[in-house]
Amino acid sequence: MKIVPLSIPTPFYVGDVNVYLIREDPVTLIDVGPKTPEATEALRRGLAENGIKFTDVRRIVLTHAHEDHCGLARQVRDEAKDADIYLHDWEGGHLTGRLSQEANRKLLLRSGVPEKVFNEMRELYSEISLLTDSLADGDLKPLNDNDELEFASGMIKVLHTPGHTPGSCSFVREANRTLICGDCVLKRITPNPILSSDPIDPDKRFRSLAEYLVSLAKLKSYSPTLAYGGHGEPVTDFDEIFNRYVRAIDDRQARVIALISKQGSTAFEVAQTLFPNAGNHDVHRFLAISEAVAHLDYAENEGKITVELKDGVEIYRNK
Image (cartoon, rainbow, N blue to C red; front, side):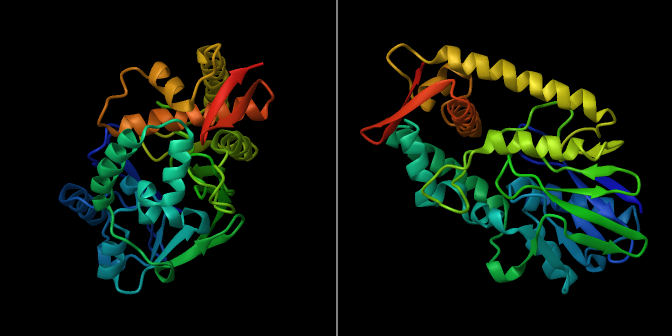
Protein backbone atom coordinates (compact mmCIF):
# COMPACT_ATOMS: atom_id res chain seq x y z
CA MET A 1 0.00 0.00 0.00
CA LYS A 2 1.52 3.30 -1.12
CA ILE A 3 0.88 6.32 1.11
CA VAL A 4 1.87 9.57 -0.60
CA PRO A 5 2.24 12.72 1.57
CA LEU A 6 1.19 15.98 -0.10
CA SER A 7 2.14 19.31 1.50
CA ILE A 8 -0.70 21.86 1.18
CA PRO A 9 -0.37 25.54 2.18
CA THR A 10 -2.58 27.05 4.88
CA PRO A 11 -3.03 30.64 6.09
CA PHE A 12 -2.29 29.56 9.66
CA TYR A 13 0.82 29.99 11.80
CA VAL A 14 1.30 26.20 11.95
CA GLY A 15 2.18 26.22 8.24
CA ASP A 16 1.46 23.58 5.62
CA VAL A 17 -0.94 20.73 6.31
CA ASN A 18 -0.17 17.18 5.25
CA VAL A 19 -2.71 15.45 3.04
CA TYR A 20 -2.23 11.74 2.42
CA LEU A 21 -3.05 10.08 -0.89
CA ILE A 22 -3.56 6.33 -0.88
CA ARG A 23 -3.11 5.63 -4.55
CA GLU A 24 -4.96 2.39 -5.08
CA ASP A 25 -8.54 1.26 -5.44
CA PRO A 26 -10.52 2.98 -4.05
CA VAL A 27 -8.42 6.15 -4.42
CA THR A 28 -8.51 7.80 -0.98
CA LEU A 29 -7.49 11.14 0.49
CA ILE A 30 -6.88 11.44 4.20
CA ASP A 31 -7.60 15.13 4.86
CA VAL A 32 -7.78 17.69 2.06
CA GLY A 33 -6.54 21.11 3.21
CA PRO A 34 -8.32 24.48 3.63
CA LYS A 35 -10.68 26.09 1.13
CA THR A 36 -8.29 28.61 -0.42
CA PRO A 37 -7.21 29.02 -4.07
CA GLU A 38 -3.61 28.26 -3.09
CA ALA A 39 -4.57 25.01 -1.33
CA THR A 40 -6.85 23.95 -4.18
CA GLU A 41 -4.08 24.47 -6.73
CA ALA A 42 -1.49 22.68 -4.57
CA LEU A 43 -3.79 19.70 -4.06
CA ARG A 44 -4.59 19.47 -7.78
CA ARG A 45 -0.89 19.70 -8.61
CA GLY A 46 0.16 17.13 -6.03
CA LEU A 47 -2.47 14.66 -7.22
CA ALA A 48 -1.58 15.25 -10.87
CA GLU A 49 2.07 14.44 -10.16
CA ASN A 50 0.81 11.04 -9.03
CA GLY A 51 -1.51 10.56 -11.99
CA ILE A 52 -4.68 11.40 -10.05
CA LYS A 53 -7.44 13.98 -10.65
CA PHE A 54 -10.21 15.12 -8.29
CA THR A 55 -12.59 13.02 -10.41
CA ASP A 56 -10.60 9.87 -9.53
CA VAL A 57 -11.09 10.25 -5.77
CA ARG A 58 -13.58 7.81 -4.28
CA ARG A 59 -13.09 8.31 -0.56
CA ILE A 60 -12.32 11.39 1.56
CA VAL A 61 -11.39 10.47 5.13
CA LEU A 62 -11.06 13.30 7.64
CA THR A 63 -8.91 12.98 10.75
CA HIS A 64 -10.88 15.84 12.31
CA ALA A 65 -12.97 18.83 11.33
CA HIS A 66 -10.57 21.77 11.62
CA GLU A 67 -10.51 24.06 8.61
CA ASP A 68 -6.93 23.31 7.59
CA HIS A 69 -7.79 19.61 7.33
CA CYS A 70 -11.36 19.49 6.02
CA GLY A 71 -11.95 22.74 4.12
CA LEU A 72 -11.88 21.30 0.58
CA ALA A 73 -13.88 18.16 1.35
CA ARG A 74 -17.10 19.29 -0.32
CA GLN A 75 -15.36 20.67 -3.41
CA VAL A 76 -13.40 17.46 -3.97
CA ARG A 77 -16.54 15.40 -3.32
CA ASP A 78 -18.60 17.44 -5.77
CA GLU A 79 -15.99 17.19 -8.55
CA ALA A 80 -15.55 13.47 -7.93
CA LYS A 81 -19.35 13.10 -8.07
CA ASP A 82 -19.57 9.87 -6.09
CA ALA A 83 -16.85 10.15 -3.45
CA ASP A 84 -17.81 9.44 0.17
CA ILE A 85 -16.73 11.68 3.06
CA TYR A 86 -15.93 9.94 6.35
CA LEU A 87 -15.81 11.68 9.74
CA HIS A 88 -16.28 10.58 13.34
CA ASP A 89 -19.73 11.45 14.74
CA TRP A 90 -18.18 13.45 17.60
CA GLU A 91 -16.71 15.93 15.09
CA GLY A 92 -19.98 17.19 13.63
CA GLY A 93 -20.13 20.20 15.93
CA HIS A 94 -16.85 21.56 14.59
CA LEU A 95 -18.29 21.82 11.09
CA THR A 96 -20.89 24.41 12.15
CA GLY A 97 -18.43 26.91 13.63
CA ARG A 98 -16.97 26.31 17.07
CA LEU A 99 -17.72 29.67 18.66
CA SER A 100 -21.10 30.15 16.99
CA GLN A 101 -22.56 27.47 19.24
CA GLU A 102 -24.22 28.54 22.48
CA ALA A 103 -22.71 25.59 24.36
CA ASN A 104 -19.17 26.80 23.60
CA ARG A 105 -20.08 30.37 24.54
CA LYS A 106 -21.21 29.13 27.96
CA LEU A 107 -18.01 27.14 28.41
CA LEU A 108 -15.80 30.13 27.62
CA LEU A 109 -17.73 32.51 29.88
CA ARG A 110 -17.58 29.90 32.64
CA SER A 111 -13.80 29.88 32.14
CA GLY A 112 -13.66 33.59 32.99
CA VAL A 113 -13.53 34.94 29.44
CA PRO A 114 -15.15 38.43 29.41
CA GLU A 115 -18.11 38.82 27.07
CA LYS A 116 -16.22 41.44 25.03
CA VAL A 117 -13.27 39.09 24.51
CA PHE A 118 -15.61 36.24 23.55
CA ASN A 119 -17.29 38.42 20.93
CA GLU A 120 -13.89 39.32 19.46
CA MET A 121 -12.91 35.66 19.26
CA ARG A 122 -16.26 34.70 17.74
CA GLU A 123 -15.83 37.35 15.04
CA LEU A 124 -12.37 35.99 14.21
CA TYR A 125 -13.63 32.41 14.03
CA SER A 126 -16.54 33.43 11.80
CA GLU A 127 -13.87 34.50 9.30
CA ILE A 128 -11.88 31.29 9.78
CA SER A 129 -15.04 29.24 9.17
CA LEU A 130 -15.08 30.57 5.60
CA LEU A 131 -12.10 28.30 4.94
CA THR A 132 -14.40 25.28 4.86
CA ASP A 133 -17.70 24.50 3.18
CA SER A 134 -20.54 23.39 5.41
CA LEU A 135 -21.50 19.74 5.32
CA ALA A 136 -24.82 18.33 6.48
CA ASP A 137 -25.03 15.15 8.53
CA GLY A 138 -26.36 13.36 5.45
CA ASP A 139 -23.16 14.22 3.59
CA LEU A 140 -21.03 12.18 5.97
CA LYS A 141 -20.35 8.53 6.62
CA PRO A 142 -19.27 7.67 10.17
CA LEU A 143 -15.80 6.63 11.26
CA ASN A 144 -15.87 4.29 14.26
CA ASP A 145 -13.09 2.88 16.38
CA ASN A 146 -11.74 -0.37 14.89
CA ASP A 147 -13.53 0.10 11.57
CA GLU A 148 -11.52 -1.20 8.61
CA LEU A 149 -11.02 0.80 5.42
CA GLU A 150 -10.41 -1.76 2.70
CA PHE A 151 -8.14 -1.32 -0.32
CA ALA A 152 -7.08 -3.57 -3.17
CA SER A 153 -3.89 -4.57 -1.35
CA GLY A 154 -5.09 -4.63 2.25
CA MET A 155 -6.70 -2.40 4.82
CA ILE A 156 -6.07 0.30 7.40
CA LYS A 157 -7.80 0.32 10.76
CA VAL A 158 -9.56 3.34 12.24
CA LEU A 159 -8.45 4.38 15.73
CA HIS A 160 -10.58 6.89 17.62
CA THR A 161 -7.96 9.10 19.28
CA PRO A 162 -9.80 11.94 21.05
CA GLY A 163 -7.90 14.79 22.67
CA HIS A 164 -7.03 17.45 20.12
CA THR A 165 -10.74 17.31 19.33
CA PRO A 166 -13.40 14.88 20.62
CA GLY A 167 -13.72 13.01 17.33
CA SER A 168 -10.10 13.00 16.17
CA CYS A 169 -9.18 9.76 14.43
CA SER A 170 -5.91 8.11 13.50
CA PHE A 171 -5.29 5.16 11.20
CA VAL A 172 -2.95 2.19 11.43
CA ARG A 173 -1.62 -0.11 8.73
CA GLU A 174 -0.87 -3.04 11.01
CA ALA A 175 1.03 -4.96 8.31
CA ASN A 176 3.96 -2.55 8.66
CA ARG A 177 2.93 -0.64 11.83
CA THR A 178 2.48 2.66 10.02
CA LEU A 179 0.27 5.37 11.54
CA ILE A 180 -1.50 8.36 10.04
CA CYS A 181 -2.25 10.51 13.07
CA GLY A 182 -3.70 13.86 11.97
CA ASP A 183 -2.90 16.35 14.74
CA CYS A 184 -2.62 13.71 17.46
CA VAL A 185 1.14 13.40 16.93
CA LEU A 186 3.29 16.20 15.48
CA LYS A 187 7.06 16.04 15.34
CA ARG A 188 7.92 19.67 16.15
CA ILE A 189 5.09 20.82 18.44
CA THR A 190 2.80 19.44 21.11
CA PRO A 191 -0.82 19.30 19.89
CA ASN A 192 -3.27 21.71 21.50
CA PRO A 193 -6.18 20.13 23.44
CA ILE A 194 -8.94 22.30 21.96
CA LEU A 195 -11.71 23.54 24.26
CA SER A 196 -14.85 21.65 23.24
CA SER A 197 -18.22 20.79 24.67
CA ASP A 198 -18.73 17.16 25.57
CA PRO A 199 -20.33 15.31 22.64
CA ILE A 200 -22.50 13.30 25.04
CA ASP A 201 -23.55 16.20 27.29
CA PRO A 202 -22.98 19.61 25.61
CA ASP A 203 -23.46 21.43 28.92
CA LYS A 204 -20.25 19.83 30.14
CA ARG A 205 -16.68 20.37 28.96
CA PHE A 206 -14.84 17.63 27.12
CA ARG A 207 -11.88 16.52 29.26
CA SER A 208 -9.44 16.88 26.41
CA LEU A 209 -6.05 16.40 28.07
CA ALA A 210 -7.00 13.25 29.98
CA GLU A 211 -8.47 11.78 26.79
CA TYR A 212 -5.40 12.82 24.82
CA LEU A 213 -3.03 10.94 27.12
CA VAL A 214 -5.14 7.79 26.73
CA SER A 215 -5.06 8.22 22.94
CA LEU A 216 -1.30 8.71 22.94
CA ALA A 217 -0.84 5.47 24.90
CA LYS A 218 -3.21 3.71 22.51
CA LEU A 219 -1.07 4.70 19.53
CA LYS A 220 2.10 3.65 21.36
CA SER A 221 0.62 0.18 21.94
CA TYR A 222 0.93 -0.50 18.20
CA SER A 223 4.75 -0.06 18.39
CA PRO A 224 4.68 2.15 15.29
CA THR A 225 7.70 2.21 13.02
CA LEU A 226 6.47 5.33 11.18
CA ALA A 227 3.89 7.95 12.13
CA TYR A 228 2.63 10.50 9.62
CA GLY A 229 1.33 13.67 11.31
CA GLY A 230 -0.97 16.44 10.16
CA HIS A 231 1.91 18.94 9.95
CA GLY A 232 5.66 18.64 9.54
CA GLU A 233 7.88 15.62 9.02
CA PRO A 234 6.96 12.02 9.88
CA VAL A 235 7.98 10.54 13.21
CA THR A 236 10.36 7.59 13.08
CA ASP A 237 11.01 7.21 16.83
CA PHE A 238 7.60 7.10 18.46
CA ASP A 239 8.89 6.21 21.93
CA GLU A 240 11.09 9.30 21.95
CA ILE A 241 8.25 11.64 21.03
CA PHE A 242 5.89 9.89 23.45
CA ASN A 243 8.31 10.49 26.32
CA ARG A 244 8.91 14.08 25.19
CA TYR A 245 5.17 14.77 25.15
CA VAL A 246 4.69 13.30 28.62
CA ARG A 247 7.55 15.40 30.01
CA ALA A 248 6.18 18.55 28.38
CA ILE A 249 2.71 17.90 29.79
CA ASP A 250 4.11 17.27 33.28
CA ASP A 251 6.16 20.48 33.10
CA ARG A 252 3.16 22.51 31.99
CA GLN A 253 1.02 20.98 34.72
CA ALA A 254 3.46 22.21 37.32
CA ARG A 255 3.60 25.65 35.72
CA VAL A 256 -0.19 26.00 35.53
CA ILE A 257 -0.67 24.97 39.17
CA ALA A 258 2.02 27.46 40.25
CA LEU A 259 0.18 30.28 38.44
CA ILE A 260 -2.98 29.91 40.53
CA SER A 261 -3.08 32.86 42.93
CA LYS A 262 -3.81 32.62 46.66
CA GLN A 263 -7.19 34.27 46.02
CA GLY A 264 -7.98 31.78 43.26
CA SER A 265 -7.75 32.18 39.51
CA THR A 266 -9.91 31.65 36.45
CA ALA A 267 -8.72 29.72 33.42
CA PHE A 268 -8.68 32.98 31.45
CA GLU A 269 -6.37 34.59 34.03
CA VAL A 270 -4.04 31.59 33.97
CA ALA A 271 -3.99 31.68 30.16
CA GLN A 272 -3.04 35.36 30.10
CA THR A 273 -0.08 34.73 32.39
CA LEU A 274 0.92 31.44 30.77
CA PHE A 275 0.89 32.93 27.26
CA PRO A 276 1.42 36.69 27.63
CA ASN A 277 2.18 37.07 23.92
CA ALA A 278 -0.88 35.20 22.64
CA GLY A 279 -2.26 38.41 21.13
CA ASN A 280 -5.47 40.33 21.54
CA HIS A 281 -7.12 39.55 18.21
CA ASP A 282 -5.55 36.31 17.14
CA VAL A 283 -6.46 32.63 17.01
CA HIS A 284 -3.66 32.06 19.53
CA ARG A 285 -5.79 33.61 22.27
CA PHE A 286 -8.39 30.84 21.92
CA LEU A 287 -5.62 28.22 21.79
CA ALA A 288 -4.08 29.69 24.96
CA ILE A 289 -7.40 29.48 26.79
CA SER A 290 -7.89 25.91 25.55
CA GLU A 291 -4.46 24.92 26.85
CA ALA A 292 -5.07 26.47 30.26
CA VAL A 293 -8.52 24.92 30.64
CA ALA A 294 -7.25 21.48 29.62
CA HIS A 295 -4.46 21.55 32.21
CA LEU A 296 -6.68 22.91 34.95
CA ASP A 297 -9.27 20.22 34.26
CA TYR A 298 -6.58 17.55 34.38
CA ALA A 299 -5.08 18.89 37.61
CA GLU A 300 -8.53 19.02 39.21
CA ASN A 301 -9.28 15.44 38.07
CA GLU A 302 -5.98 14.33 39.63
CA GLY A 303 -6.91 15.99 42.92
CA LYS A 304 -4.10 18.55 42.76
CA ILE A 305 -6.39 21.61 42.82
CA THR A 306 -10.01 22.44 43.57
CA VAL A 307 -12.62 24.34 41.59
CA GLU A 308 -15.80 26.14 42.62
CA LEU A 309 -18.44 27.93 40.58
CA LYS A 310 -18.91 31.54 41.68
CA ASP A 311 -21.36 33.79 39.85
CA GLY A 312 -21.20 31.45 36.87
CA VAL A 313 -17.40 31.48 36.66
CA GLU A 314 -15.05 28.66 37.67
CA ILE A 315 -12.45 29.66 40.28
CA TYR A 316 -9.48 27.33 40.77
CA ARG A 317 -7.54 27.12 44.02
CA ASN A 318 -4.54 25.20 45.24
CA LYS A 319 -5.14 22.72 48.00
